Picture 1 (cartoon, rainbow, N blue to C red):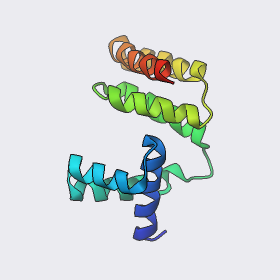
Picture 2 (tube, rainbow, N blue to C red):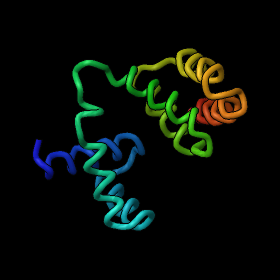
Picture 3 (spheres, one colour):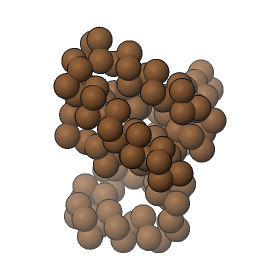
Length: 125
């Protein structure tokens, strides 16, 4: 995959995730993070991580939610990825189960904050 293809794929994935046009994604990222950071994000996201044939988008979304829940301080990302996970076929029960499982490994404090973000996102849909 060429750099141009990766960039375009990254922008398309962000557009799908945020529910906005590709031009809006590009403008948002540049205005929010700067051009250099935006370009890195587009290239990284457009790579094979979201396109591999080994894991479907539902499973990938659940894994991303688990990873985000372990970090703490990324509640807005958890809300966005919760909505994206639903669009990728994950159920509310699966999403809540993933966060509950994370509590045993990342701690209840982080998982409880993540669950609050998940519940807020689910209430919006």
